[in-house]
Image (tube, rainbow, N blue to C red; front, side, top):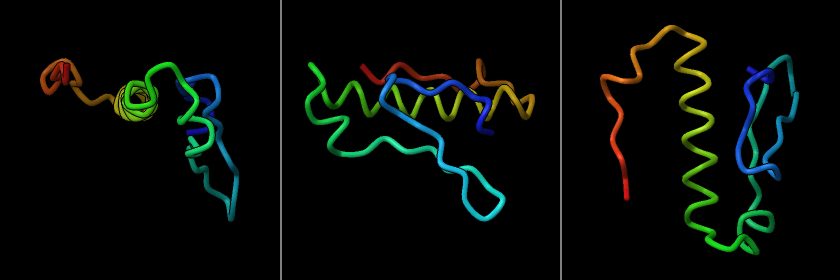
Length: 66
């Protein structure tokens, strides 16, 4: 999973106990121009990356949350 590129740039992967954890801290999201968008971008990048890696048909479940 750690090969999946995360958004925004302040999001990171942490390796622990043989697994990978995607992290976007509050302190990294809060100063963004649009903190809500930063968090949503993080969640989208994580979901899309994992779903594509698993071969899930993401286009069938995509929803624009705007």
